[in-house]
Amino acid sequence: MGLKRLDKLIALNCNVSRRDARKLIKDGAVTLNSAVVLRAEELVDPDVDDITVKGYNFTAKEHVYIMLNKPQGVISATTDPKKKTVIDIIPESLKRRSLFPAGRLDRDTTGLLIITDDGAFAHKIMSPAHHVYKTYQAVLSFPIDENDVAKLESGITLGDGTECLPAKVKPVTVDGLPAAIIKIREGKYHQVKRMFHALGNNVEQLRRLQIGSLKLDAALPEGDCRELTEEELELVFIDEE
Figure 1: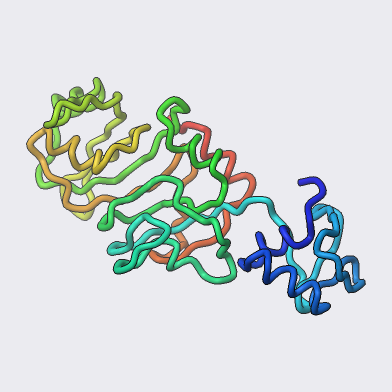
Figure 2 (figure 1 turned 60 degrees about the horizontal axis):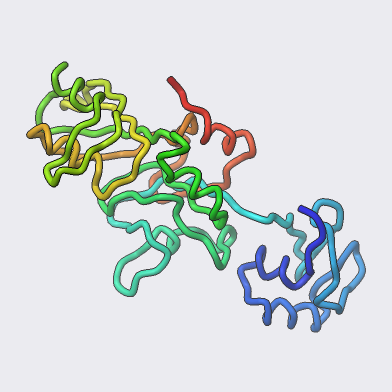
């Protein structure tokens, strides 16, 4: 990570303002390699130096990456005056001041969502140019046939004339109901629902299962989250055929 100002590092990792971070330092609440440090501008190396705040040791990170199993009824936004957002349900232990969802899931769509403060990482996930496929399980009103699959895989045109990039589609059943596993690398508004609507079908339930080769942790309950490992981050940009 390289050398960083101590006050900036504490603000970033402890979810406090720079002003509050400087006050913590001034009040003697911060130690650097077991010695109290009183200079907010002190340069530290998070990969080498041992830092504690109010007696608690923390591992400083430039960015954080969180896997969230998004529940229904929560919107993919940072703030909203009336509705609960995905940031609202992140526990305080993982919160940072600049967290945002890397992409969007509709309010009634569940499943894998990555929360981060790394803008370049998020852009790489969301841009179609990087070919990061997102895999969804869509429970449908009616089964799809080979003709439907061919239309989706050749790049279907939506009702308003919007052309979609080719998808990858597999008909399945979920609890005896008609469904499909669909992989897309775009993020147009309500795209998966609109794609099936263009076939005269309706999506009854939608769940994101995977981003690239990163699969939603089956042991993670809806509404819960955890940090991603370095190995899992690499899987995001590997396509699983």
